[in-house]
Image 1 (cartoon, rainbow, N blue to C red):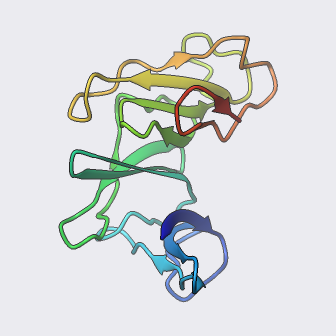
Image 2 (spheres, rainbow, N blue to C red; image 1 turned 90 degrees about the horizontal axis):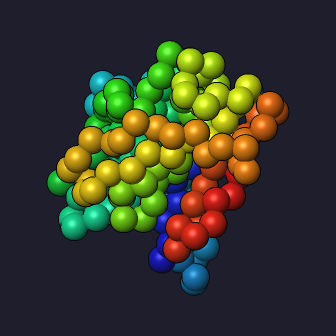
Length: 171
């Protein structure tokens, strides 16, 4: 069946902070399974902060979970036992202010996210949507680029998401 990563802000016994990442699967016969908490740092990706925008990508046997925590973007690689370890800050994407809600293209070579960092090139005010690319999943991300005034405005543009074929940006 299908799987879903999501964030819950409900104060559950396993919760680590203000919003934690969970995983569940859907089976046509049985419906949604009981959500599985991904664990608290230092052994899991959840922290005392507010995790947002989990985005999963699996390429050539490598699986990564991108998410934001507090003001930065993190990545956690899936371990051989299927668990996800502590998140590592993705330094080339993080600025000096809020970089949140990453969404990774299915091939792992493009990422979009929202940022309210006024020091970023092209910042228009509020949260803007940025994109970064790379040639393969082992390469670092390019410098994030503001998607310009055809997407961004002086208001807040948030929760960017690429369509399955990466031909549409939803936000």
